[in-house]
Amino acid sequence: MLKLPGLIDPHVHVREPGQIHKEDWDSATQAALAGGVTMILAMPNTRPPVFDAATLDLALDAARQKARCDYAQFVGAGPDNADLLPSLAPRAAGLKMYLDSTFGELRLDDMTLWMPHFANYPKEYPIVLHSESRTMAAGILFAALYDRPVHIAHISLKEEVLLIKAAKERGIKVTCEVCAHHLFLSQDDIPAISSGHPGRAEVRPRLATREDVNSLWENMDVIDCFATDHAPHTLEEKDSENPPGFPGLETLLPLLLTAVDDGRLTIEDIFAKSVINPGNIFHLPEQPGTWIEVEEDAEYEIHASDQFTRCGWTPFESWKVRGKVRKVVLRGKTAFEDGKILAEPGYGENVRK
Ligand SMILES: [Zn+2]
Image (cartoon, rainbow, N blue to C red):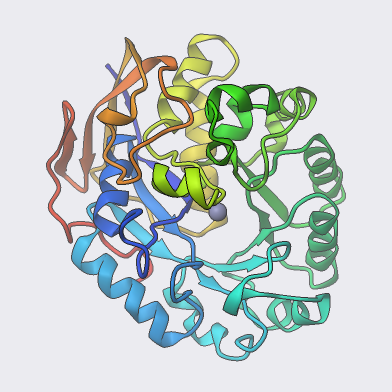
């Protein structure tokens, strides 16, 4: 048995409030524990989005009652809330800004709407950017102009990892995460994932070229964190409305451990990018009495039918992996063991309380 600290996933879509047929604080945190993740940071693009005190309370009330692992909740930047968000910062995981997508209350149609957020949000709390390609370059310019840390979510492209490398070398306060699906899947995998249903392969950022994927592996030292961007939708939705997003909480660690077995990663990489770095970037407290036990030699196939996520599918269906989470201990209590969730709803703690 390999013993590791509990993993931190800095990018999870819990879907509550508003879309609990896809997932809720109960099922998302069960999926987390089954994947060896003991702390999740929840994204704010729920329905309603988390973008003021009332909606933050709504999300945190649900989490307090249902969460089985520890957590914090992001607030989202909108066109009108830059003045009120700083007062919420101590209660939030950080500020999430959607610089590319334009939807609902979290739309930021032009760069003048970015400015007050960069100016006002307290520098001791992180700003996380959904920003792809050239938009990411603009986000890094803002980090330099306002001399504050920014964390780039889910990088996927060669041009992105190389620009972040250059920005870091010049002392700009930028960090980044990469998702398992952008490390282990490329455009070449789209036919197998979609199998006649194109919506199943939809994800943002899109799956990239083999060259992009290779560049992420070659620049692993530039990447600060592993994340899932766990974004569950039901198969029925994936096959009709084609919403972008993959589930990922239960497949992250087995995929990473398989890469360790293949000699492409080290256990130290997992420790750094799933525990130490997210803890430092997001100023998260340590979880005392918390560890996971992994059977390194266990070989098995990934099947959605074995998973706790409510969405009922995975882009990694039938993948052969090596390394299985056997036990998760969270703050002194066994929370998961041999396929069974043992932590009760509400056992999870808000790490920003
Ligand atoms: Zn996301």
